[in-house]
Length: 242
Ligand code: 13P
Image (cartoon, rainbow, N blue to C red; front, side, top):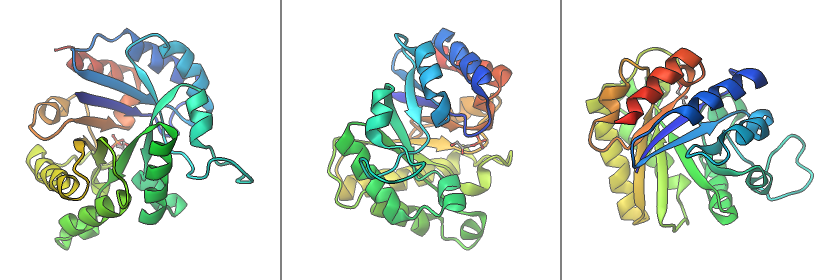
């Protein structure tokens, strides 16, 4: 299975979210390709109505680890499931950076997602500074190990998103990404033994998508900005048809 995940972040209003969902719904994708769209919480219901009954499935951009209670503004797994969500991004670097999400919180969210029947897509990646200091492997390893501590499941999906590549137009090379993907797969094999898919994210565009999509050990892509504009989303989806 290969995954195409569109993370619309906080980029679009309701009308545009619906329009993007219609584009995704209409796209022809080859067998073995799963398209997942992740609108902001407030557009999930509207987008869900558009993709309902199609091959496109719904993802959320985050979820809280507590199941219910006095947690103002938080959204729980059960609430997402009620809206038809099947996947949830966990530990996106923007959550870590702007909302103080720690590796330990990511671990709690991973456990809560599995317990509640959602497939987490765990995001990991190093900063520019860590990369320059030669710490990519140690940082990513630590993130993966902590995220899956005490987790024993059949299927793991991880997105490797180097922070320096997100929204910068400076994508990783497919060879560098592949090396990190191999490391991640090795760690999951040793610690968890699960089937593991690793997606690449960070400045994926219609121009470089083909290369990532066709590189061994890259099991799909997680796309932000280019998935939130109709022209580029259409071009990206067109690449999934063969
Ligand atoms: P961009 O595709 O905008 O670089 O964002 C990547 C990302 O963060 C997806 O989750």
